[in-house]
Image (cartoon, rainbow, N blue to C red):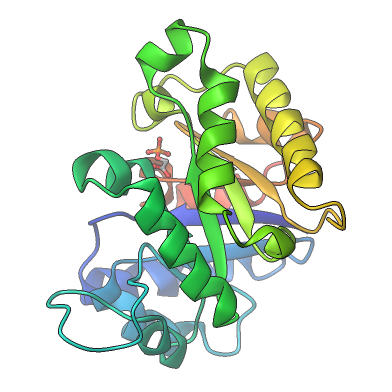
Length: 246
Ligand code: PGA
């Protein structure tokens, strides 16, 4: 089933979350053929969990820490997320990589912790503009995925991957259909190369300036098995249109 995920980033207080979810749920009530995921900030997980109970909309977190507990001021563990009904965690978003200095090594540790705890990660990968212009897109994506999955080769079916070109995020300038097809097909081949027993159960999502006008086009593409939506997910009507686009 295709996965349509909302990444709210640092937006929405708990009371705004309540208002959003109350408007959003009736709008997507009839949707059965795709999985819908909301990833609010940590501070809104509790209220979101309460409101999503009994609905098929899933709850995700935007980040996590890999240690189970201890002296890690400001961090949030996977057990803490699990208790709030979180079933997905976004790992390695480009904002984490480039604004907060997350390395491939740290991303690998986070993936390891998620996968061993039975939490499904959405691993984000994507090239920066200068890398794209230098013709390095596939190389960058391959390196990010290989390093993220190092020593986790047998888990290729237990995560989803979001291809999010850094230059397309929040820019109003999405990747072209040709680029998306090419990179997604490459990622699928790469997973089979990493794990000879790969069963093809990990979805490859596209993210970067998705909106209600272009969402259907992306979802029709071969190898696009979902979307990770930032800005356009902040309004419940707009996001519901994306969820329902064909
Ligand atoms: P955008 O963000 O939809 O605002 O481009 C996507 C993302 O960062 O996940």
